[in-house]
Length: 176
Image (cartoon, rainbow, N blue to C red; front, side, top):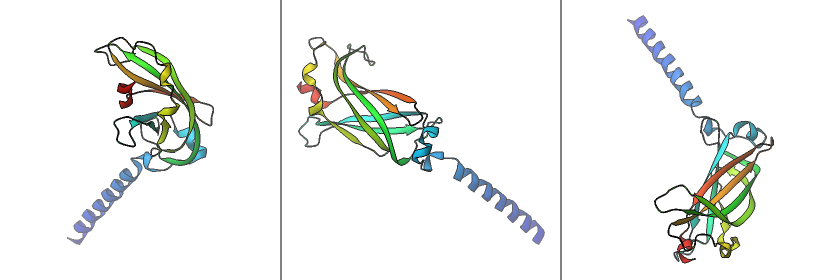
C-alpha cells in the first residue's frame, strides 16, 4: 500500500511541477522589457486616444493619448525608462452619412512630437488650444459626421518606423 501511495504522490508532484512551468511561461507580457531590448520586442503599437473634459463644462479641453507597445503575438509590452519619439499629425475627417470609415482626410490641424517613456500606462495630453480649428473649412455645409484622424509614427532605436492611425471624436466639435 505504501508503494502505491508513493507512486500516486510522485505522479501528483510531477503534474504540479509541469503545471507551474506552464503557468509561469505562458504570459510574456508580465516581464518588463528594458530600453536596450525594446527594438527586438516591439512589433507594432496602438494608441487609445480620447477627448478629455477637465472642468465638466461639456467641452473637451485636450486629447489624451495612451500609446501601447505590442509584441508579435499581440501581448502588451510592459516597460518604463524608454524614450521613443512619437510623431503626431491631427487632421479633420469627413464621413458621409451612414458610413463608418472616413472618406476624406482634410484640413491639417496640428503636428507635434511626444516621447513614449512607458507602456501601457503613459497618458499624454495635447491641449486643444494648440490645434488650429480655424483652418477647418472643407465640407462644413454638407450633412455627415465629423471627427479627427490622428496619424502616429513611432521611431524605434533600430531605425524602424511604425505607423498607426486612429479616429477620435471630440465633444468640442459640436460647438465649432
